Length: 72
Image (cartoon, rainbow, N blue to C red; front, side):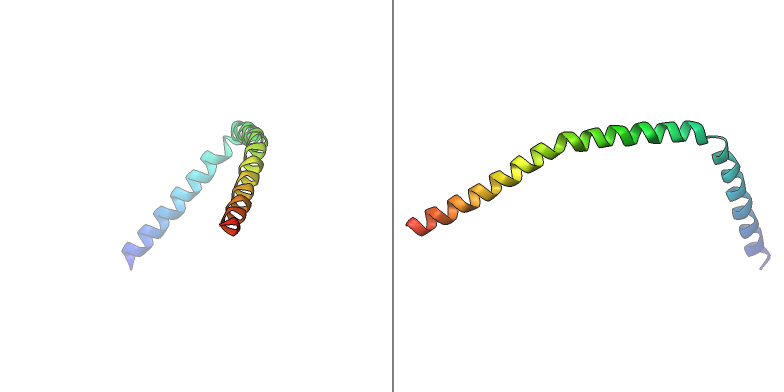
């Protein structure tokens, strides 16, 4: 039982120290996440035309296969 208390106390202390360490970084972390979000959104904007083109190409290929199969 004493071992369990020691483990619980050490977990609570480590979480408390982690919380204090995280409180020291909010501006740097917020800036990093803001830039990361902007970069990801710009990459997604670049990927949409490619995704649409690939989807349309697959649809056209499927229609061509159906037409070719029906003609034979």
